[in-house]
Structures are given as C-alpha cells and as structure tokens.
Image (cartoon, rainbow over all chains, first blue to last red; front, side, top):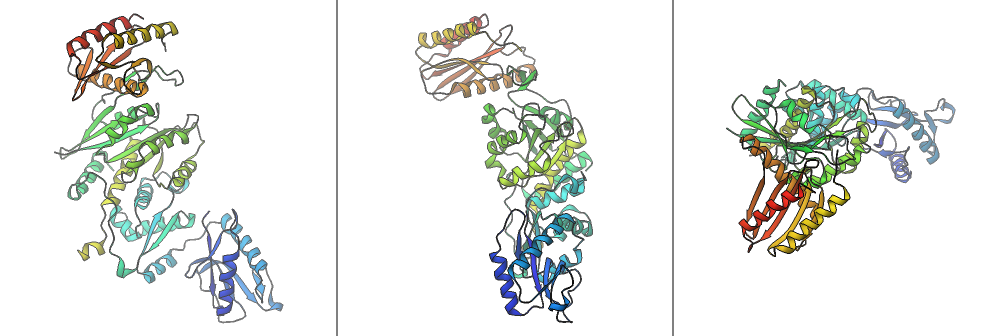
Length: 220
Length: 185
Length: 128
C-alpha cells in the first residue's frame, strides 16, 4: 500500500514542526500509512481556519483538516488547539479509509505545475497496472511498457510512443491515482541522463528501422 | 540483410509452439517427441527447439525460437537466449501452481532479465481466473521486476502480436536518449 | 502413453553396464527416453545421468529434424567429436517406447569399435 501524503498550509512554524514529529512517531500499519510531504498536491492538508486568509487553494489536497477555535469546531474535519496526537491520528485513519474508497479526481493541472517548478519530473512504474486500468488497449499497454522500463516525463512518453501528449499525460495521471507510479524529480541543471543499459544486440542506427519494420509487418 | 531472434519459453502446454506458428511466415520446425511423463496429459513435448521466422519488407529476418519448457532442458535456455532481442514467457493458468511455474523461468533467465526485454503472457485466464494478473504482478514486484503482463490466447495472432509489440516498446525505451543528453554531447 | 516395465529396465541396466565393462575406453553410457528422462546408466566418470539424458534427447531430436529436412530418412546416430574424446547419440527404435542411448568415450577410444558396439547395443535395447 502506497503511503498517503499530508501537508500543511499556513500554519505557524511551531505547529509544522509538531505535525512533522507526530507523523514520524505514528506507527505504520497495514491500514495506516501516511507520510509528511513538503510539496503538494497532497492527499490531505492541515490548515489554520482561524485565519480568514488561509483558504486552501483548489486542488491542493483532497482532505482538509481545519484547526479552529473551540466554539467553531462544527464538523469532523475540525480540531482545536493544542493539536493532540490522537486527534490527528484518528482523523488521518478515517481520511485514509475515505481515500481508499473513493478514486481521486484528476490532478492533471497540479501535476503539470509541479513538473514545471521542479525542472522536470519523470515517472516510472513500480508495478504492472491492473487489467481494469489497461482495458486491453494496445496504446495503454505500450505506454505502460515504456514506463516499466525507464523513468520518462509525459512529453518524452509522447515522443517515443508518437501518441498525443495529452493522452500520455492523462494516462500518467491515471497511474498516479493508483499509486503504482514512482515520481522521479530531475533538476534541470543535472538532467544529463545516463543511458539505460542497452538491449544487448542492437546497434542504435539499426534499431529504429527494425522496430518500425516489425510494426509494419504486423500492422501495428 | 540482418537477422534477429525472439525467444519463447514457458511450461509444457503453455503454447510456445502455437505462438510461434501464429506469427511465422510458414509452419515452424518443431522438435517435439513422444511425451513419456504421465503427470502431464500431453501427447508430445518439445525437447530441442521450435523454430519459426518472419521476414520484414527490407529483407531482414526475425527468427522465433521456442525452448523446451521443462527445467531439465535449462541448458538450452541459455544457449537459445544468447543474442535474443526479447523473451516471451508464456504461462498456463490452468496448471496447479502457475506462479511457481513462472518462478522457474524468472530464475532460469535471471541474468538475462537484467537487460533483456521480456513480457509474460498468461493463457487460459478465462477458464481459470485464479491466480489473476494482479497476483502475477505481485510476484514480479517481490522480485523487483516490472514486466508487462498480458492475458493471451496464443491461437489468436493478434494476441501474440501484442506480446511482440511490448518487446518492441521495451527496446524503444532502451534506445531513447533524452534531448538534454543529446544537446550536451 | 507406454513406459518400460521394471523387467525391461533391469535388462537395459545390464546391457549398458556390460558395454562399460567390456570397453575400457568408454567413460559413460546413458539410456534415456526420447523426451529426456534417464532410464539406465553406467559411469566411470562423475557425470549426472539426468543431464546427459536431457542433452542426448535434444541432440537426437534436433538431428532428426535435420535428417528429415535433408530428406535423408530417419536419424540413426550423431557423433560428437571433441578434443578429449567423443560422444555418440544413437536412436533406439523400440516398438513401444522410443529411446536414445548416449555413449561417452575418452581420447584413446577407437571410433569404429565404439560405433559398432553402440549399434549392437541399440539393437538389443530395441528388444528389451
């Protein structure tokens, strides 16, 4: 089970440190797997609802835990100060259940924003996706196969597969929702890639011709 | 003219010979003989190799080799895997323990699997739903492998072609150089 | 699917043993089913009969294909000539259970003599 991510939004530094410490101390179990994340989007975020200007931006997180004043703690997504470990843990456990039950909406815009800021984000499959996700679609299978072999950005996926960039991005998004994909952030300055170990027998100049030739032979 | 090789392996009865036949230009050569193993209800078994081929429009040839499935012929596996472009492992989901069967080939081709493109085709899933493809994926993940896993009926040419396509995609991933790397050269 | 009876296997074991004792330059004799299971063996060297059996059946099957492709009829025997000796893989055309006998001989062995003896062995094994 992939860990869910918890972030913070507009909290005082001391409370950020407290939450980070609590997250390290919470024991991971088969059903409770959360980790603190510095950058979003997150699965859940803790925010200071006592501050009127602390509205959480749309798309930052699916679940929002609001720290409110005692008299304003109106629903299950509110806690009051001081932040208590068992309150946070309980809320995260419940949130985890909800997240597992309800598929995530597309986080496409956010993913792109993260990609731009980070200078490059590549994705690699850590496990073959389910038949339900692949739908026996040769294009999806081909994209998944590429991602199984090396970490690729969506635009690189589009380039190799010659499929539209939007289609590649949408597929990567759907894989991210399943937690099967590993995000590999690449700093722009250090983006010189070490080539993956080559297939043993192909000389590069011949290879593209061979692959196209086989695809033509079978009408792929 | 260049010649290339694809290798098909998997348990007895998984359909290696049929798969090769499905995509070969002409009927493949087979080295199957009488099966004396009473534990397997099959009249004949491959003890040497199956051989088929198809020719590309530029005259290049792709040879398809099928290995014997039983591990007593594993000495042939290494010989046949040499210089192969890719490996297709066919699994028969109707057998008593298909995941254990797969492990035999993952072990037998362990060295090759570090670099050789590979796909696992699982047959007879429609009549034998367990283990399912997620179970196969879990087994592979435990061994640190992420391999394409496809349901197949090797009597259907399109299914075998899709297996070959995943090998080609893996070759493409191997060959890809990113723009930054090219610019820096 | 027929298999050899226990009595036949015992006779086969006696036959392969006899060849080994009779010809001092023979290093090993392995009788195998056509699909590579060892049935009887006699050895001077530390070799694994199961592996020899599998290899012999592969060699036999591949050479059978060559024989058919070349329109030379049914295969009889394959000679593997090496630096330190030779091996003969001879078909045994048993009416119920096709077999393969593999004889490994050292450098001092005489090919003609061994070939003659193996051909005789194959004939008698076909009648066990």
